[in-house]
Length: 443
Image (cartoon, rainbow, N blue to C red; front, side, top):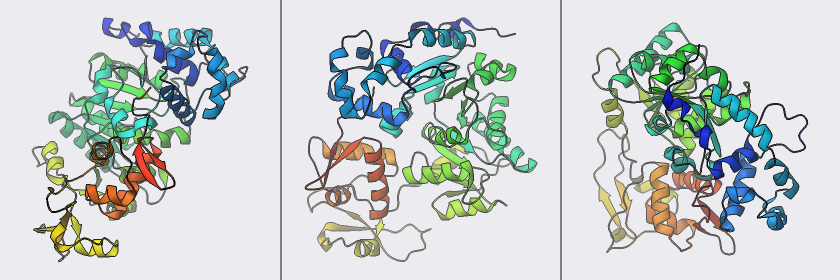
């Protein structure tokens, strides 16, 4: 028997915002679509539509009601077919039937225009944040942060028990646990946290509707300590593409990430961890020692070894805070290798950390003698914040941006490309320069 609390009955399905209604019509899937002429918009297609709306100072809700019919022809410039948009926003009956079904199971729907939409996804993913989120449970849990726990499905019982103990340690320290709900490591981490009374966020790739009415999940949801969410249709079954795509949302919702076990060079755990290392959504820790060859390989690629002793350590939060170090300043030889021609007066030598193997002194770059050394940029989030402050209304080339922010060339290229991919900045040509995107307001 499913018993819905008053709080769950007062979910957002009873009062969708106009923007959310429009986005759901455009991107949502409602039961069988075999007879429909057009498929819902993909993430990339909605990003193009959102850009068109923002440039026209419009909201998604403006597409409903016929007020913009005369302007639909402009959608061709955004790579979208006007007749397709008209067809999608006319699916009101199909949407109402699905909403009724979802509401009976206590589900909610959020769009990027809603205040309850997780700020972490907007901040870390920008325009790549999913247009819609479906879920069950207290939406405020989506922004509590904590530890993303990920790993392979098929692991030893010893690894599962260790994962449960890590989840329990997070709960005792007031840290949320974010995972994908899959068999194996995911489920063990969520179970350990839940049984210890902790907060748990499950980011599902499939079967949200079924998971939301599972008796054990329902108890966690009603207690206010479990929230399940998915960017995919609540009725969607499993497919590999969705499982891979949701990895970024797990990492983006977390403060730290832990890979318990991973194969090397293949599988969703490996792919997600590599993607996180590339984009810097959350500091990546990897269990060590481990029998999985993928763990050592991830550490070699930039992950931090995780040797937390669950039996004898007092605080897992303190462990992460202690081992999440600021970015190391750039060694002098890196400047030479990267062709930076700074004068000695513009380079400030700082003491080298004891644990670093290099014998070269490390430096921080000053833009000129009169300016202070730039604040250290440790994460992609820091990079975006500093980049926005630096660019303002101006355009700068890559070399000027990198020198102003004091980043090494390799990391800078990765983060700059990600900022362009996510629509945060735009690359201009003739001459090549970067400016803030006009898509800064998400819709």
